[in-house]
Length: 340
Image (cartoon, rainbow, N blue to C red; front, top):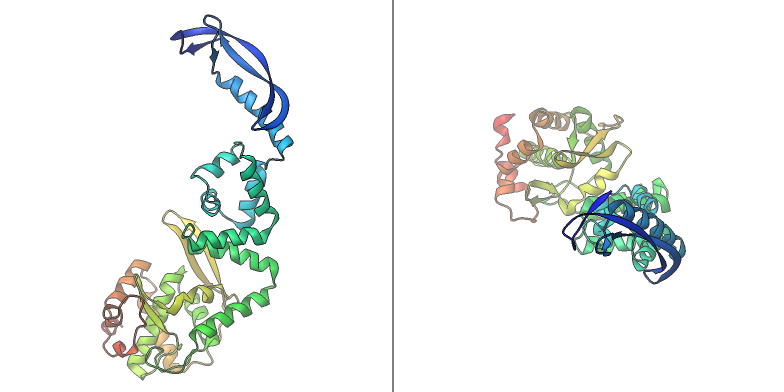
């Protein structure tokens, strides 16, 4: 079999010489490597198959002697938290293709291997690294919440987690009746039942659209009755009104009346709210249910972008500065009235 020799600048025959290899990356391994040599000029040549077999043998011995992490260990870590190679790379702060290379058989340095092992063996250390990566902007909200949520579920029971979410939501959203909550004190139980009811009527209700459903329900209620239904406070965000301080995230994680499902499609990750169909509307007046049904009828056949655009037509969104709370005073002049 011939290979190209860069020294002779032609295809040449080669012979294989076995050479002792005492150490690799500072670790004593006492093995050998086969080296292809040009029969004409006697220079070493690169032959892919020979090098591949050398690497397999050397890497295996090096892993064993230096206690280097295996590809499957890294895969198991990712699967444990449901994260991709890209997400783990961002958390660890490694080069772009580092984790991909290690999972395909590449060998980490001793220091990198020891560090990954530490994070595998200590959940708290891993979560600390995740929080650091999130603080530095290396991972997004979804990656952060996914990992921290799994850690919480392991450490504490379901009821404890749900109670924690409820406390965060109530502490953040409870306030005296004022113009920013539509002169209605926040009622979490009522909001849960309304969300369950909406999601029972709307297929593939995204968390983004849910914010708009609730806002439209409350401003229509304020327009017609002088008071909102939920007591939620909303703020202006780029894609429309959202529940203040992004508390829709914790709301979406409550699982008594509905469940949150995250899935990937060609456009990215989507979060869908699905009803458990055990909602109780007994706290609502007939006039309030009628308002909710009007908004469902108006929006249910529109996509996320259309619903967002519809919210941008309202004075409450147009006249409020980004991130500021949206006053219900703007509910007295609604564009959606023309569509209902």
